[in-house]
Length: 403
Image (cartoon, rainbow, N blue to C red; front, side, top):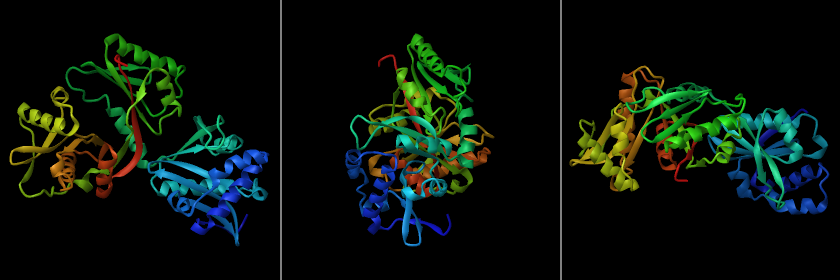
């Protein structure tokens, strides 16, 4: 098919695209009652077309197909890939698919999920998507749809996977040890456990048995354990397997990555505020007080146990108003930045940014190339303004003897 233009949908095309979607769905032989039940789902509004990134394929003055990309990078949803029935089978679906992937990459997405019509599942799998599981239909009560996933790896994400996952069990402080069990590494000690896994564990003969074995290992010790997942993990149904074994998901965070040298400028601080590296356990107690005031829980025991941390505080009139730390190992490609909690009266004054810069300077001096942060939405906004890139999301799955 020639002379086809891919462009953003216009607001005045909302109703036209809704009818196109219904005609496309009717191609699979659904009856009128079924299509009537789907009509509300395809009642697009002009606002939908802008917010959900609708793209159309146009030939002359005729709209032949479309797709949409929803969500916020790095994780989103590819939806509404529909074609006029008379052009199905002529290659336009593949062209729209490729255009969607190129658009998603350009906008920083590294994972797209697809809630597919069952009749389209084979097409998406042929395009390289893998089935994740099933989700309820948005139109037909009791009906389920296959959910698929396509990964869009970037060099930055691949570097993160290669270096950060490997380093999770390196440089452990006294009291913690790492043990291998097949492809995974479990960290043991101090009544808390951690499971570090490579990106792809789909080749394990019996993954469910491996997961249960980790749970039972920590259960015998009476320890809580976290299995850290990322959005681009394989197999795609790893989260469901963890839940089936009794793990529960905690809050999802976004993994942000920045080039250390680009953030290692001289920290700019409000008048009366200084940043310094801590000197004593008394400083840790002051950080503990800060953390308790902000979050309602202390953090001193963890900081003391992790004796290998480089910890910085921001002070004003002798009071710790913010603090951040990192496990700085010279020569590492990546180092993670942690902490950053700031007293409410001091937020929005550049202190978080200054703590990032101060740690970046130390990281560069130690030969570190990249900084990474598991971040909440609030911190993400700051880091995006600084130039950090979202590369994936991470969700801890936790099992506890108290559950």
